[in-house]
Amino acid sequence: MELFEDKLHQDLHQFLLSMNEVDERLPECPDVEEKWEEIARAYLPDGIREFQDYPSASLGWMMYIGMAVAKMWDDEWEIYSKVDDLYAYMRDKRGFDSMDEYIREEVLLLSGADYVALEKLVGECASRVYNALRRQNIEPGTKEAFSGYVTCLHQLYLMGAAVQLKRMGYHMTMQM
Image (cartoon, rainbow, N blue to C red):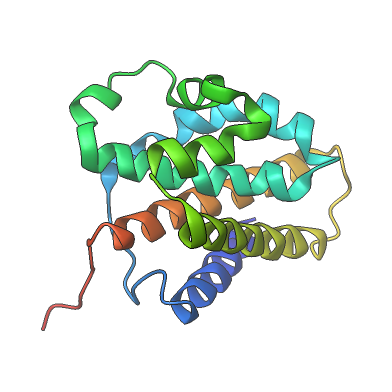
C-alpha cells in the first residue's frame, strides 16, 4: 500500500502543480497533519457508508476537510485546535451531504466563479484518486480495500491542506 500511496501522492501533486494550485515543494504544517488521524477516525463511518453510491463525494469531502482545517489553522487555531471533533463540528453544520457547500461558503468564504472552480478542482482530484483505487483491482470489503480507501483519504486531506495554504499565501521555496 505504501507504493500505492506514493503514486497517488505524485499524481495529485503533479496535477495540482499543473493547475498552479500547489508549489513544487509542498508545505509542512504539523498542526494540520496531526489532526489527520482524529479526523479520519471520525469520518470513516460516514465516508464508508457513502462510498458505494457516491465514491467521488466520499473521497472529495476529505479534500474539502483538509482545506477547512488549513483555513482554521490560519484563522483561529487556538480555538479550533481545542474542538473535540473537528469533523463532526463541520458535518453537523449542514449534514454530510452538504458539507462541501458549508466549507466552500462558510469556511473558505467562496462564491461565484471561485466557488464553482473549487468544486471542479476537488471533483477532478476525487475522480483521479477513485480511478487509481479501482485500477488496484482490490476485492471490495477486504482489509486491503479498507487500507486503500484510507490511503486515498489521507492524500486528499494533505493535498487539500496544501492547496489552501498556497491560496492563503504560504509558499514553499527551495533554500539555496
